[in-house]
Amino acid sequence: MATDARFDVPSARKVFGEAINTSAQHNSAGAQRTVDIGKHSIGINRFSISGVSRIRRGFLSTLLEPVFAAQTVAQVAMESREAAGKLKALGIAKDVQVLLDRPENNQEGIDVHFNCQDGSRYAIKTGVNVGDDEGTASVTGRLNNIFGGGESLEANYTRGNKTQAAFQGVLSMPVAADPLKQLEMSASQATLDNRPYSSYDEVRRTLSTAYRASQLGGLSHELRYSASWREICNVGYRASPSLRSEAGHSLKSSMLYTVAYDDRDSHTVPTCGSLLRATTEIAGLLGDVRFAKVQAELQSNQEIADSGFVVSTGLQAGVLWSQGRSPISDRFTLGGLTSVRGFEYRGIGPHDGNDSIGGDIFYAAGISLLTPLPYIRTNALKGHIWANAGQLALLDDRGLLRNRNSVADEVYRFFMRPSAAVGVGLVYRHSMLVLV
Image (cartoon, rainbow, N blue to C red; front, top):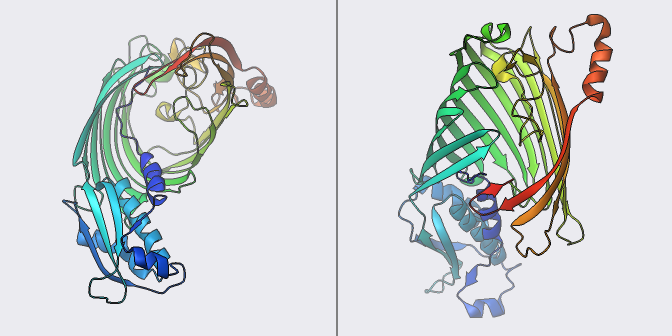
C-alpha cells in the first residue's frame, strides 16, 4: 500500500506538452479571413500580461525571446502557446489564455496579451508508504515561484519503523525559463534502522546539486554531484565481524549520470509503455570512498488486444567495482516487493551470520500478468500472476573471488542458480493508494 507525499516532478513535462497543443485565440476575425498567417511577415507591436502576482522582468524577457523573434502570425501563435505552457508547467499560472489582436491605431504588427489565472503560492501534501516490510508517514510542503521565475522550495519530513527520521530540502529553478531544464540544490539527513536484517543503524547527511534536462517524448538526462557523510552506528552486540569492520564514519564525494526513457501511463501499475534507465556513479573525487558503479533497468508493459490482460516484463542488473572491499552503504540489496517478490526484504545474497551485508553484482528478472476478474466491473481491482528470479554476490574473497582457481565455476553458479519464486495475488489501484 502506498500514497506518495512527494510532488510529481515529471508532471511539468505533461502540463507543458498539453499546453502547447492548445489553440491560441485570435480576436481579429477580419485578420483571419484576409491574412495568410503562415506567410505574412509581421512583428510584435506590444505585449501585456495580467493576472500574475509575481513574475521577474528578466525571466519574462527570456521567456518571450522566441515570441518577439517570430516573423509570421503563425509563428507568433505557436511561440505564444509554448510560452503559456511554460508558465503553467512552472506553476506561475494555473491557466493562460493567449489573445492576439490588431493594434487599435492600425500600426504594423500585432498585440499579444496573456490573461492568466494566478498559480498557487504554496502546497502541503501528506502520504503513507507501506512496502518491503516498512511503513512510513510523510509530510511535504512546497513554496512555488518564490523569486518570480518559476523557482520552488520543497521540504519533506518522513518517519517510519525503519526510516527513523528523514528530512530533505530541495531548491529547484528553471534554466533559461524552460521547465524541462532544471537546476537543483538539495540537503538531506536520514537515520535508518536496518534491523532485523542487519545489526546496525546508519545516519546519512548529504549535500547535492544537479542539472536535469527532459524532452516531451519521455527522454531525460540528469547529472548530479553529491557529498555525503555516512555513519554506521549502534552496532548490535551480536553483530557479525563483517559489520563490526564497517562501523564508524565515511565521506563520499561522487558524480552520477542518469539517462532514462519513460513513456509508461503510470509509475505504479502501468498498463502500457516502457522504461529504460541507466545510472553511472563514480566516487573518489574527495573523501575516503572510491568506486565505480553501474546500474540498469528495463521494463515493458503491453495490453493484449484490448482484452484487459496486461503483460509486464522487467530486468535489472548492476555492478560495483571498488579498491578492496566495497562500503556496505553503497552495495546492492535484493529481495522484497520492489526487486524479487516472494523473498524477505534483503533476503537474497551474502549474509554473515544473521546479517545481510549486500553485494557488488546482481541481476533480477520478472514477468507478470494482470487479469480482469469475473463479476468485477471495476478496472481498479485485478488479478496478479507473477514469476521472478535474481541473484546477488560480492566481488571479493567472500564471494565470486573466494577461490581464484575456480572463478569460472563461481560465475556459472551465480548466473545459473538464481533465487526464484512464483505467486498469485490481487492488485487494487486507487488514486490515493496501491495494494499489491
